Length: 196
Ligand code: AR6
Image 1 (cartoon, rainbow, N blue to C red):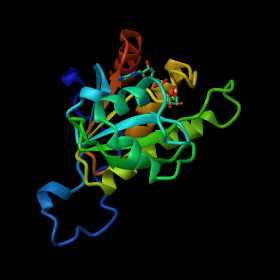
Image 2 (cartoon, helix red, strand yellow):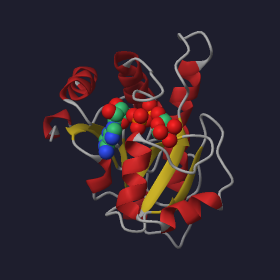
Image 3 (cartoon, protein in one colour):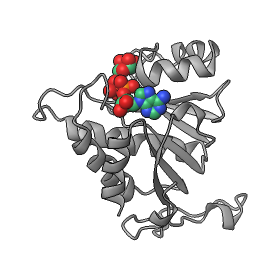
Image 4 (spheres, rainbow, N blue to C red):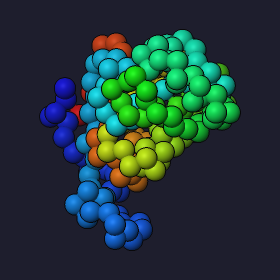
């Protein structure tokens, strides 16, 4: 756990962008600084409000994180995904987490790496931004991300880590804890370097 990473000063969570609804407790819903941390692990075991799935546009399952989340969540996840009728690259949609420790799964579709001149960076940033927006809509206080697009989709891990950290830090969000879950030691070190 990278607790020493602590809070950072680069997001805009102290900017109040809308009146706080009276039914919401002020202590819970005031925008506040987010804690962003890098961990080594497996997203399927993350005990957070929402885990992010590195899905494909069909949302009907696949390998990597997607396959692992479907196996761990159970068959109801596929049924719920079918009802979403797919997802565009760079967008995100949510289902319940079913058998997962997480209450929600936010399915996002990263870009396939094509050399870097096909808008991949914008689309990858959009995955992180949209996932945080969906998490906010769900009133999720904590979220765990895998390294979207860096597996089957071939995005270079170092560039993807920079986009992940920069996008999360600059997002306006009510999410309080964001965990970047690295499946391998190299990815964890890439995150740690950017969070230092
Ligand atoms: N927890 C955390 N990270 C993981 C896990 C896990 N359980 N398993 C793999 N990773 P990928 P993509 C890492 O391929 O590149 C699927 O078939 C992995 O080491 O899961 O966005 C979908 O259906 C890598 O660093 O996602 C799509 O068709 C990262 O997660 C396609 O793959 C992402 O690897 C999406 O490809």
